[in-house]
Amino acid sequence: VQLVESGGGIVQRGGSLRLSCVASGFIFDDHWMHWVRQVPGKGPVWVSRINSDGSSIFYADSVKGRFTTSRDNAKNTVYLQMDNLTDEDSAIYYCASITFFGWGQGTLVTVSS
Amino acid sequence: DVVMTQSPLSLPVTLGQPASISCRSSQSLVYSDGNIYLNWFQQRPGQSPRRLIYMLSKRDSGVPDRFSGSGSGTDFTLEISRVEVEDIGVYYCMQGTHWPYTFGPGTNLEIK
Image (tube, rainbow over all chains, first blue to last red):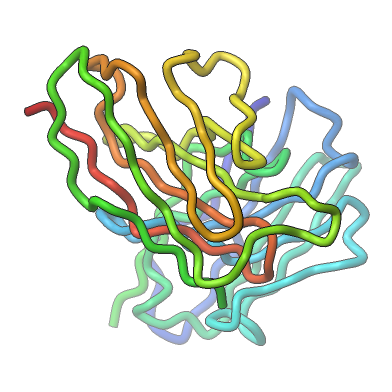
């Protein structure tokens, strides 16, 4: 199981970023995918999950209306579109799958003023 | 949201000795199918979380059998029978029964 995130970086407050997570080593379209974020030194926080065909998506209240999760099963990729970013969104963002058995290495998002 | 609490938050242990971490949930984690969706994760410094235990007590492949999970309803325990140096890190419980999924604050396992 391998998950590789990309797309993190430094963005201004109010800006947008799109994270990607490419999966391999398992049957991607059989599994839900999750986004989890973690401020260094703090515990992880679940952000979003998308079911196997993309028809059902849940979000944490803190990101609802600003973040959009999608997936492309042909590309074994899940995305997190993050809009109207605030300082509180600064964190390492992980994708995870197979009921959190597989995790990526994370991508760092820093929101600056 | 279901609040997960852990104790202790810091756990100094002697190598070769047992360790126990407690996790409590603000609501029962028994799902409608009768299962308890309680996971335990280990996070070593600079690494991603690694799942050790799922569904309360099922050990993931490759996880040493010195790790075990137990509990019921709202009270859960991760036990390490004999701590080894590679076990150093932060341990998190996470509930997957209720939306949104929530994690505990973490327990920092360190060598005494």
